[in-house]
Image (cartoon, rainbow, N blue to C red; front, top):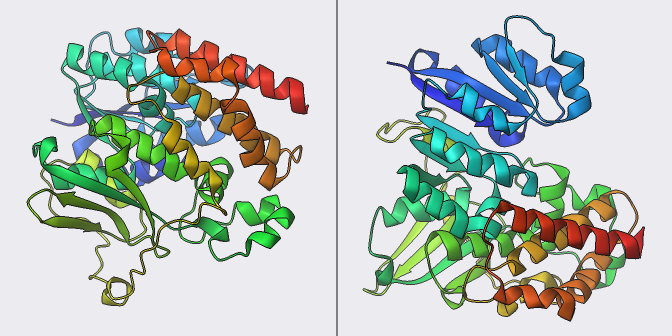
Length: 385
């Protein structure tokens, strides 16, 4: 029997990687839902190729352009998940919508699937306590889709987390790792979106350039593996061949290595017992012999310092951090602020007493998180637009 698949954010890079994997094994999968925000042309092509009966296009204007297409059910919002999955439960859902916009669809999809792979960082960072309850309530299996977190997940394999001494997550250092600090004031958008190892969207490429993406990944690891921040570290590894190191209290350490190919972790979230991955390369001993691991330079990447300000428990402060960064990156990409201004403005916002108070407030529902996001966006836009 074919496994029933849904892909939230199928027109983004993660969604396309998953589509490509499924296309090579179509006899074993049936895609019952694809979704996108605005890219309806790619969405319709994907739906036609895989004979998908349901799509969601969340942008209202784009939805109105295609809503009357025949032979396919076209919806405008994720409330329709209840209708789409009324008679059938998915075997696997990939949540790959970027940003806080992906939070509500992720939450709403949990009850409709046996297994969910989450690539949406914001869901895990801002709402892990809410998602975890929903996962347990519906007995839905969760697996992280990020390369670093899947690497750690695969090593642990249900091991007792109390046996972990430290976890190291690696960062390439982005495009500016070797750039002198004196030249940071001259960084342009075209420079910031040139990731040396990965092909990613503009927003996440800027997060890599500031190393905020690693801050996010540390917070994700804190939540997923229920570890204190002090046992989670960032190491710079330019080649992106080593993804994580898990150091156990018994003296053993596990290094997880794979090529810079997101299809590898995505493939392994989809297949549980398949031990053969196409395009498998031999171990690259040249890279292994030159890992060159280093601590990140906090003068170049000051946003890493935010990790020392995090509360030990989940709170709405994580939403403050994510929303502040997201808004500032958007302003940078719109040429309204300079690259160096991202970190400067970031700390002025998150250190403000008006927002630091959220450290003691636990999110009760998705609306709490969305409300904080809107407050932050309004505050920043009122100052800099």
